[in-house]
Image (tube, rainbow, N blue to C red; front, side):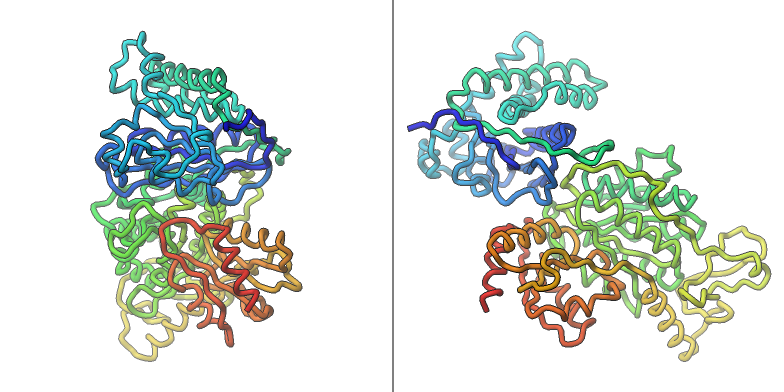
Length: 616
């Protein structure tokens, strides 16, 4: 028997939009997350793209998902499972049901559940709800396609174009469920389709039709949800993805340093959006070059750095491999360069639209010779701004290439971001030559405190020099094959990286008496922090040490890791960070939690695994 309509006041809720890759699920999810951020909700999103460029319509492999977690306060993860699932066709329902809670409200387009649709989705009977053991009372069965056609019948719109508005009808239903202001949705659509106002008006009309449908048939909805926003710190907020935040952080750093920003890049999923975003900002002294391949992209950035620009190259794991020869050139030349690696599933082409942390050892050691480079790992979509800024600061002040690790999860995911006051960020002072060196400058003269060499820009009178891939004499800068000199230069380059000052790693939670210390790095922060909180709710003493700076490690690393009786390193690989820490910290032998699924951690599974370790 169907439940009566119930209004649930919740602190947080998770919605997942799913359908064919051409159904506009990413747009619907993006609009919902944006309007939620505007009204003051905390948000975290997870776009889940199919790897196929365009799979056959209605197929199981072509389903695209977008999950958004909204809350009254701070939200750190997109949620383990959703409270509301939108399934635009039979394949979406079949593949995405596993991401829904048992009591979740499900919205389906019954027009996309015909015999052919069910066959493509490999259902065995026409009773698809029964086959999936779904209670019909929690399903909003809407003839969505039919209603969109009826809504737009007088517009003269092409029938195929009409169908592209189906996502807006579903969005209208969801906006009614969560009492979202349709004026905010309309503003978003008007801005997005500014050059096609008739398309914007049609989509707005369909959103209102979806809202009206939900309002007029609310008896069929098992529950509605309301999220009360808590007061945020005053300021301007926006919904920002990690890739966009990375681009903005690089622009801010270049402005702080007083330099032009040069990006040499080759398109690769999931890093391409950084190139797209930076290409929009020529007015901010940004130069972007799409090169013919990865090594050319990196080499052009090295050339720009030699010429005096703040140089960046962006890629994913396969591209880092292809850039490795050029990266060795940047190491031996000791030129500032920011290398953005947006990690994805591998090896080879692997899972190009999915997320992993499997490039760590590659960026630490994956070059010939002894070629150390600083490595920073961003911890969230919004932290990508700060991490990119810091990577640039280290590169320019220590004259070294720096790797910034993000991953597909935080790069494509988004959070509500308070626009920063750039005046509050530290200064960036490139390590330039000094006036007293004029006339007697040699390229590997070093700062005695940091071991960084001094940066001379070509064309500066009195600072003529040559750089290149062959080893140089530490005093004169001339090519040298002397074994003692090479040994000295290898140690100098290593010592320069070791002397970089980075903040201590912070221990959060029960830092004085934790039964278990959880250790992670990079984009898993939100899930590991949430797992720590869940353990505390169950009465356990738990703490978290999450690393943003990987090389060099924070000075207090050994002290933190050896303080606790039980330590677990959790990462989305086969144990690369745990192995690295064992090599850096004496008598450190942690437990490990490793998953390589191309999907974010599930908090409930983390809690279960950590409780088992506590019991041992």
